Length: 118
Image (cartoon, rainbow, N blue to C red; front, side, top):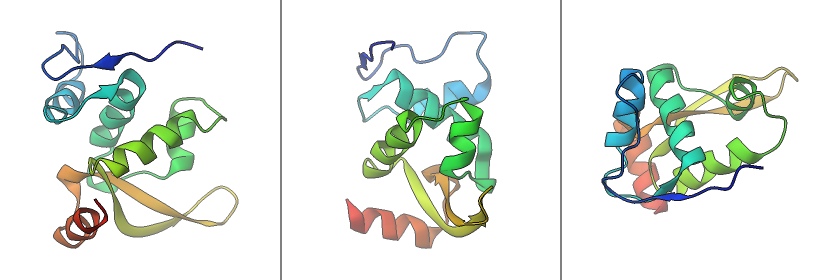
């Protein structure tokens, strides 16, 4: 397992050749200290835009059957950087799953609910 290291405010979060979504994810972290895996999850959330994603889709994207990425998403939710979109989507098991979005793509209602939880 690769150790996680804290990325302090202002640290380079994306390489020059990285996609614009990686740079946007790094910029959105300016008031938070996050781990490398959290930064990857945040970049994924930005790339999904308003469409959002489920925890199942997140795990499939990172080819992980463990809860590593879901746990990092949960931590980012606690920070208010990823929020519940208020939508549900059927997963591969036909169960309803919450759809998460980066706060930049959240509705005003979702943002108010997220702010109340902090």
